[in-house]
Structure formats: C-alpha cells, structure tokens
Amino acid sequence: MNFKINSISLKQSFLTVMLFALLGVLNSCYSFTGSSLTDEKTVQINEFPNNAPLVNPALSQQFSTAIQNRFLQRTTLKGTKENPDILIEGEITDYSITPTTISSNTQTNPSGGVIQQAQNKLTITVKVHYENKIHPDASFDRTYSDEAAFNSDVSLSQIEDQQVKLVTDRIINKIFNDIVANW
Image 1 (spheres, helix red, strand yellow):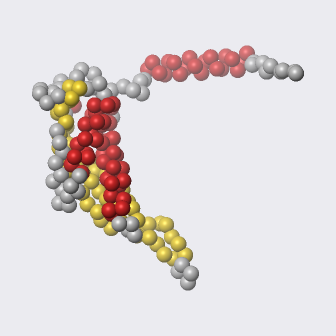
Image 2 (image 1 turned 180 degrees about the horizontal axis):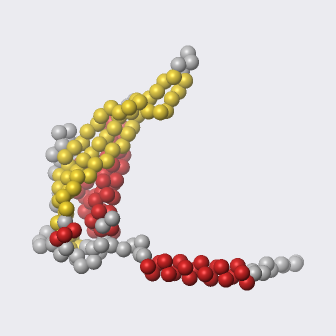
Image 3 (image 1 turned 45 degrees about the horizontal axis):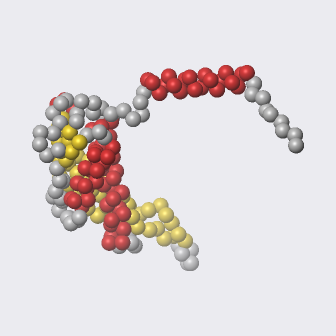
C-alpha cells in the first residue's frame, strides 16, 4: 500500500494560526453569553392574569410558568417571594383571533380560475412591569405583542395549543432579551 501525505504549505499554516489568534482576540473582546444582570441574585415573577376580552382559560398559567422557567433556567437568578432584587409582573391584555388578508398561496381550480386561501391571525399582547431594585434606571413598563397566522380552513381548536406556544415563546424571548441582554 502506498500512502501519500499531503503537506501543508507554510502559508496555509500561518493563515490558520492567524485565524485562531484573531478568533481568540475577538472572543476576549465580546462574550456571546454575557448578561446585563451582574449584581442581581434573586427574582420574583408573579402570575400574569388574563384580562383580555377573549379569555383562553389556560393561557395565564401557561405564560406565567413559561416565563418563570425561562428566567430560572437560563440565568443564575434564584426565585424568591420576599424582597427580590428583580420583580417581573404584568397582565395579558389581548388575546384575539382575527381574519387577515388573503394569503399569497394560490391554486388553480379545474375551470382555470385562481383560488386564494384566507388566513386568520392569533394575536397575544402582554403588559410587563420590570423593577430592578439594584439598578433602578433599568426598570421599565412595556407592552409586548406578537402574532401567528394560520389557514382559515383549520379550526382554532386543532391548532390553538401550537399557535399559543409559538406566540408566547416569541413574547417571552423579547422580554428576556430586554431584561437580561439589555439590547
């Protein structure tokens, strides 16, 4: 058997070393896992009541549990009920299903006409009060909203759990980023 070893040129070796050195320097300048919560140790996240005109009976509990899990699992904060460094509370102010514009998905029917499918849109809006007792200037009151479209020929009961999870995850991501990443 004949084995041929490919030699790496000095130029390629130099470029590889320089690339790793550059990545090391960039990594030391900016951390992708950084958090603006440096001095805060405890968090209290109250239940978010559903005060929307249209009430999904499970939404309040699902949202409250999901936001608590996000902060307790992805930060070093510890949950507390007494004198927290951070307080997060709010309410669900809108839960609505509305018809939206006709989608761009088109089909041609046998007679040659074009059929366009209509869609509905699920929208959830949450008002959030964030209080940081260590850094009061970071505190805020904001409203977050997101939506998901689905085909109108599908009943809401068939896709509601999936769509609600999608929309609440997006809202929680926005809240989490505004508090933890401080972007």
